[in-house]
Every structure is written in C-alpha cells, then in structure tokens.
Image 1 (cartoon, rainbow, N blue to C red):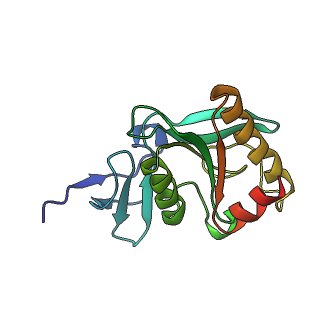
Image 2 (tube, rainbow, N blue to C red):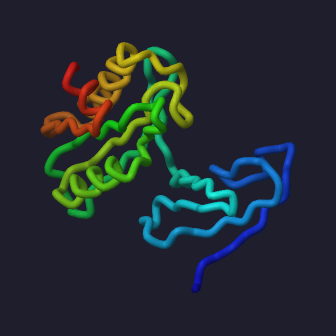
Length: 171
C-alpha cells in the first residue's frame, strides 16, 4: 500500500526515540498519509495514534514558564492578518493538533492569515498544569501578546474550538 513501517524496540532512554514515540514493547508504526507534510500521525498495533510534532515548534514565554506553539505563515507573499487558534479541553485530550483546530488554522492560512496554535498549560511541552480555565486566560493573553508584539499593525483574529472558544471569548 506504500505505507512505511518501522519497528522500535523498548528503550530506557526516550532520547533514542523519534519525537512522539512512547516506550513500550515492540511497536509498529504506520504513517497516515492524509496529513500535511509538517504534521505526521502514526498508528500503532495497539490502536494508539501519535501525532508527530513538526520540526521548528516555537516556545513563547508565559507566566508559568513557556507555551508550546506552532507558527505558520500563509502561502501568499503578504499576510492579511494574524490569528490565534485555541484547542478544546485538555482533560478531554484537546491539543493544538486536534483535527478541528488543525483544519481551522489551515483555512485561516488559506485565507492569507499567519496562524499561531498554542498548547495550553500542562499540554504537550507547555509548562504548568491545567487550571480549570482561569490560568488558561493567561495563556491566551500570552499568545495574543506574542502576535501583537511581533506582527504590529496586523489585524488579529481569535479562533477557538469548544473550551478554546470559551476561554478566548473571556479575554
């Protein structure tokens, strides 16, 4: 079928594994071909699916440390604005790699906007712990501050899915 398979043995040192691989017994990964080149997902024999982080994730400062982000410029030569895209509830598995968040960011990119997707505190490589929506307000502000500081005079769009939309509207 053209899919690539790679076997990874159990390793005590997770640094030996590619990003996103979880240590365990022998696992077989299969690249899911319907992802963009910058994001790849792998499905394991156990049924576990892991989204591989694209190269060049950005970390922006936050009151609790740092937020893991993905900044993507539009294909058009000049951006028509910037957008912060927020994910669903972290305790329900929400991350910046959520399918709806990814597709919303892609649509905004196609419309000519530069997009910044963030992982809220305690998600992925972002520091801190989930704070029931209170601390996540600071995360949204940190994302907006980054965009307004680095892309002055550009209109800002705020986009969120579920929990991300609720928290974004409160800022």
